[in-house]
Each structure stands twice: as structure tokens, then as C-alpha cells.
Image (cartoon, rainbow, N blue to C red; front, side, top):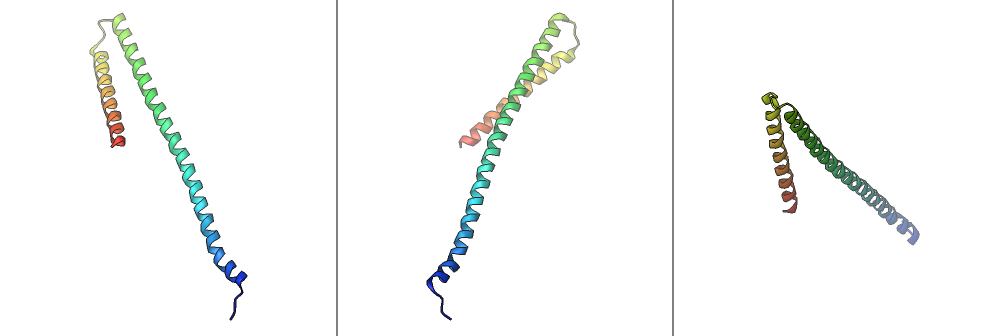
Length: 103
């Protein structure tokens, strides 16, 4: 059985073309995944900012209530103390996460 040059070339080019298509598709998927990761990071940052803003608003409200009503029950004072503790724990966690990514 005898094959001419074009038959052999066609025979060997088909796997190369298929491999090139697979590699191209993998690159596209990777690019899409990177875009989703960036969007997720931005969303996480917005959630953290929202949590900080919510805490600031709650703290200001609690202080205003305590000024208007200095005889308010201890729940307001305890809630403020608890919120401040959580704020510091969150900050410590986020700083730790940042340090983990540096090393």
C-alpha cells in the first residue's frame, strides 16, 4: 500500500488541528474564569464595605439613642460592645488573609 505526500500530510494534520482547537477552547475557559474571579473579588469587597457602613450606622444610632435616653437598658451598651468586638475580629481576619496572600 502506497500513500502519497498529501495523504500523509492530511492524516497527521487532523490530530494537530484537533489539539489546537482544544487548547484554544481551554484558553477561552480560563479567560472567562479569570473574569468571574475578578467580579467575585469586587463583590466581596463591596460586601465588606457594606458591612462596615452598616456597623457605622448602627453605632451612630446606638450612641444617639443613649444620648437621648441615658437610662436605656444595658442591651444597647452590650450590643455596642459586641459589635465593636466583631469589627475588630473581622479586621484581624482580613489582615490575616492579606498576609497569607503575601507569603
